[in-house]
Image (cartoon, rainbow, N blue to C red; front, side, top):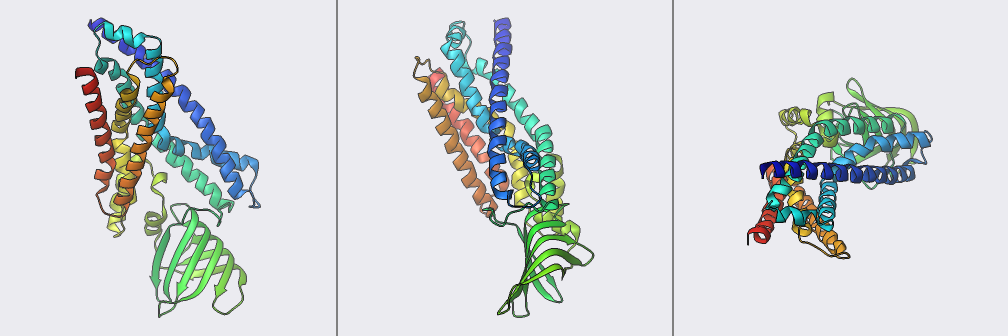
Length: 362
C-alpha cells in the first residue's frame, strides 16, 4: 500500500508541476503583452521612448506581476489538474484502491509549498532587482507620466527657508534621483509660495538639483527654467526609506529596511506588510490547493467542469478581495501587518479543511 501511495504521489506531483508550468508560461506572455500595451500608451509621448525600451521595461516588470498573481495561477492549475484526473477516472480508481483525498492532495500541497518557497527567495529577489532596473530606466530617460493614475509618494522637509513637500512619479538610486518631481515651497505662515515641477531632481550636498523646471507662483506667469535648486537637510538614507517602494526591496533585505525606517522614526508598515505577506505565501498556496479541492474532487460529467472552474475562481476572487481589504486596514494602522498577512491564509485553510472533512469523512 505504501508503495502504491508513493508511486501515485510522484505521478500526481509531476502532473501538477507540468500543468502549473504551462499555465505560468501562458500568463507570463499575457502579462508581458498587457504591460507593454499599457506602458506604451503612457510613455509613448516621451522623446526618449522607443519600442525596444518599452519591451525591456515590460520584460523587467513581468516577475513582479507574476509574483502577485502566483496564488491565482496555483488555484487555476490545481483545479485544472484535479479536473483532468477526475475526467480520466484516475481519481475514481485511486479512491477505489483505498487512497484518501488527503493522501493524493499531499503531492499538490508539497509542490505548492516548494513553489511558495521559490517565490519568496529566488523569484522575489529577481523581481525586486528587475523592478528597480525598470524604474532606473524610467528616471534616466524621463519616461514618467504626470497623467498616471497612481499617486506619487510625498515627503516633507523643514529647513531655515521654510517647509517643502516633495513627490515624484518615479525614483531610483534609493530615492536620490526623481523623475516628474513636484516641490511645494511654503512660507512662514504655511501657505504655498511657489510650486516647482521638474523633469528630474537629484539629491546633492544640502540641495535638490532640479532640471527642466516649471516655476508657478501666485499672480505671476509660469516661468520655465533649465535648472533650479531647493535647499534640503535630508540625508540619502532617510530619503531612501521614505520614497523606496517595498516591492523593489528583496525579501532578505526587508528586515534591515524595517529596522532602518524605525530608527528614523518613519512608519515601516509597507515594509512589514510586504515581509509578512511573503512569509505567509507558501501557506497561502497550500490553502489554495484546499480551495481548489473543494470544487474539483466531486466526479463531474462532461459539460459540468465549467461550473467547478467558475466556483473555484469565485472563491479565489473573494479571498483576494478580503485580503486586499484587510491589507488596507493594516496600512491604515488599524490592525498589525502580521495579522493582515496571515488572517486570509487561516480563513482559507479552515474553510477548505472543513469542507473536505465534511465531504470525505462526513
